[in-house]
Image 1 (cartoon, rainbow, N blue to C red):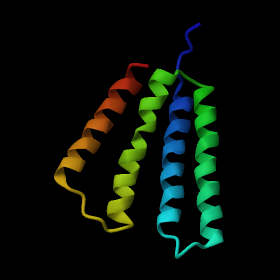
Image 2 (image 1 turned 30 degrees about the vertical axis):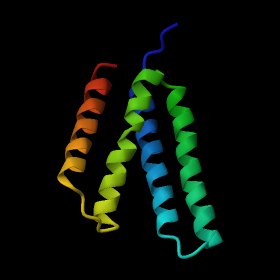
Image 3 (image 1 turned 30 degrees about the horizontal axis):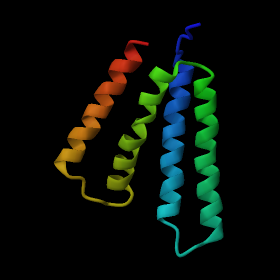
Image 4 (image 1 turned 135 degrees about the horizontal axis):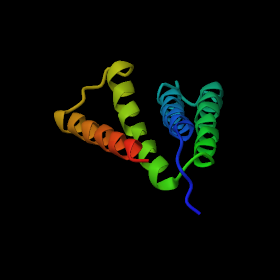
Length: 109
């Protein structure tokens, strides 16, 4: 039985990707091995997993899993804005390709 992916599933998957990126950011910013940062990062990352489960309940794996690749886009933006990392042009091109692919797959659900 084919399950139609709805917009709610796609939104949940984007939230999952974003939550996982912020959980990893907390770990990246962690001074030494601070238990508060470890637990905080885990809770944020875990909330992303909950949103991913909700997403999969509202759509097809073949549509939602590529949307999860937006985590690479979010990680690149976070690295540039928050961590002040320099992003090479080839990475920017890769991010543009990911966004284009997600738009194509999302529109053809």
